Image (cartoon, rainbow, N blue to C red):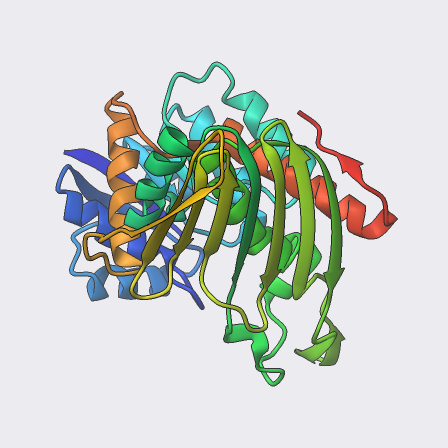
Length: 348
């Protein structure tokens, strides 16, 4: 059994729960140890999940008794824990973003350049059945990609009475909707359609500019919504993201062989409009039946199996730190473009 350590047992959104369920569903791993700065919370979490894991008093103690770590702490701590795993020679999966600052993202990528152990970044939407089937169709039948349009967002933060939290503070979260939702879309554009970008333009907006903090009303420091356009060798990508009211992932990809639309609404859907490469659309439309898959559980089951495959040295569809850095470079250029009002180049 692969011994896994869970770092960060969650407060508001419990990603660690989904990681644990996915690992147990696969059956090749045991949750051997857990660490959280709130030890009482970690003990409660272990009991709630019916685990026999050791609750460690420090991250170093956890690293001493595991083969790999699943890093589920808030954004500002991702890089530090990932670098700690590298220093200890452990496999790791870190939730996105790898770090809040682009400098730390680059430092982590440099640290694992010749690492030789599994280093994954948590882009869980890769493991939707609709996404995997779309990837097969797009790469097999669309040929040259012309455009990719996408949107993604959430609804929880649309309530203006919700208090200020770490996701709304730049030093603890980085960008807002741009990084939270845009990161998944930029990764999916590459994973599904091979679209990688050289330049980007962007606009952002803080829809609810002030929320209640510990000492009274306080400013929200990052964006609630963003729209950006990017271009590379495989066409143009256009994106809208929002954390104050928007639907689940939607992608529309066009190319010389037709058009593919996927939606991660429940139920997930996938449609293909056929086109002759040397002519127009044929009128043929196919809607694909997809195996039932429960969001988020089914997606995390796939991601955790991919993590264990990676640990065992098997081919894995997971995103590594190098891919995580590419995504962050695109988002960094987008944030710069929103500030400058100019098109910015993506550092590659």
